Length: 108
Length: 306
Image (cartoon, rainbow over all chains, first blue to last red; front, side, top):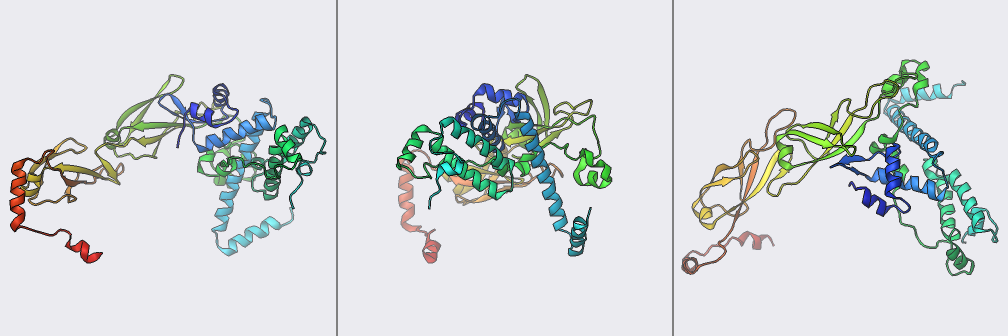
């Protein structure tokens, strides 16, 4: 389900159209575009709620925000790759898995 | 036994609202689950801290809590799905930075093989991010294919070629039409997600088209040739004598082309007998007379099976 700017602002406490557009411009939120307008999905909404929470409740300032988002996006990107790697290893036969485990447990 | 909310936030009962807010912010920054993904303990503590702040952070609720009018659970916040619930799933990739492995290149080719395009590059030019668009196309345009223009909020436009037979949810990738690259790197791609608007007449099932065709009483009884709409325009179809409502006829090759093979599905036409708006006396008299010696029972099977 995709919603437009107005619905997003009505839905999320503490969000204004102006702020929403500024965040899209800065690339913090990346909605789809349809019929000249931005369209937000559930992922965008969850991220917007998080941004508002950081700003309003946790007092994170505009200057600190890019640093936090960049670290967060890296963590999730890394977790995703790590998950893929673990899944790929998990699908290997037992001997291969054990060889990899042994290698991981070797003293550096 | 209920936990004391002041203890949860680590403040005295006499703390000022400002002290409570500061204590909350300090704990929330440390424990926020979106920054501690996968850490259950942090998540549980964060929930308690938020719930405590929900009450103590609001002077009115705090006073009621102090007076014992509400317990430590207070009122329930609306439950939203959290960012972390999406972040590692398919869509979450939109926000991931793919630059986290560039320095792994010294470990040899294994990392570039494992983690794709970004691992090998140490620094310098970076491909621009992909941009996502949503395009609504009419049913017949999706079925027949064609060109459509997407106009962006900044006024620029993107031409999209829609292959015949595309379905809702399919994504068209336009190479190099995304955001510009960094430091001379190539631009990203534009990803156009297609939504097909439903048609009032035609519905689609895979590569087949379904349509309901109203026919007259006399056409049902006597059979005959009638015009049927198809996605290519109207065609003539023969209704067999004695066709009941619900009977389905097939028009071979009048369905949707498969975008890969180009082979077309079929159109299924479901007949629906429609009586004249006014039952005139001639029809009524005929039916009364006909009924006397031609009784038949279309519901016999229904009774057997009930």
